[in-house]
Image (cartoon, rainbow, N blue to C red; front, side, top):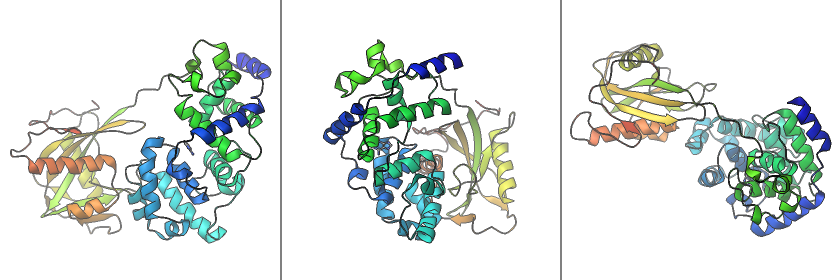
Length: 394
Ligand code: ADE
C-alpha cells in the first residue's frame, strides 16, 4: 500500500519531546531491578543486550548471571576456549550470539586495549554487532544520542504514531526511528532507550496493553484515535513452522558413547551431539539412523534398540528425533579428535550440547532406569514398543 503509507507519513506528527522527558521520569520510578541495571559497564551492557535480542527478560536473567560469573571481564572472555563459552551459554539458544561475543572479545582485547569502542560505526565493526546491538551499547553504556529499536520499541513507536505499515520493513523502521529520535532527551539517551523497552514489556504489551497505567497515553495516537490500541502494529500471521523427522544412533562401547561436534558454520555450530540426521521421505527412521551413522563416522552398528522419540521446538521448525542405541560392529577410519570422541556420560555432560540432546540423554537415563525394555513415556519423549515402519515428515 505505497499510497496509504506515503500519505500517513506526510501527515504524521513527530513524537513530542515532552514524551521523552515524561517517560524518563516514569522509568526512574518504575524500572525493574534487573541485574544488568546494577551498573553501566559496557561489557555488562553488551552481554545483556546480546542475550535480550532473542531471549525474554525473565529467561535472560539466569543466563546473564551465569555467563558473567564464568567470564567477569572482556579479557577473561577473550582468553577462554570457545567450547567453554558455548557451555556457559548452553540453554540460551541462538549460539551464534555466544560465538560472536567470543570472537568480538578477542578483537576488543587485540585492537582496542580491552575497552569496547564508543561509537556506533566502531561498534558495528565487531563480529556479530549489528545496528541494534551497536546502538543499544552506545546509548546505554555511553549515553550516545541514538535510538536502539528492538521489537518493543517498534511496537511502542508504532502506537504513538499510529503506524499502519509493516514494522518489519526497513522503510517503516526508519520512519519509526526518526519519530523516536525526535523525542530523545539529549542527555538521557540511556534512560530513554531502556524506558521505551520497559514500557513495551510492562505496559504497552503486544496484547492487552495497560493504557491507564501509561504515563504518555495523552500523546499516543493509537490510544486517542482507535478503540483498541493493541491492533497497532498490524500483526501478520506467522507461517507454520515446518516439522522435521530425524534419527540418531547412540553408539556405545562399554560405558562410553561416540559423540561429535557440529561444524562452526552450522546451526548449533560448535555443540556436541550423537551422529544422526534427517529421515528422508519414505525412509524408515532406523534406516536413516544407520545411514547417517555410516556417512558421518564411517562406523556401522550391530542390532539397534529403539529408545524412544524426543521432540523439540526451534524458532523456525519443530523436530522429532528417533533415538536408537547399539554397539559398533566395524570401526571406521581414525577419529578426527578435535570433533569426534568417545566419552563417558559424565564427560559428555561437561561439553556444550543442544537442548534436544539434553532430552536424548534424559531419555537414555529413563530407559536405563525402567524395568522393561521400551515401555516408558517421558514429558519430552514418547516410546513405542513397535516403531511404525513409514518415514516422511509427520
Ligand atoms: N530488552 C532489550 N534490552 C533491554 C533492557 N536493557 N532492559 C529491558 N528489556 C530489554
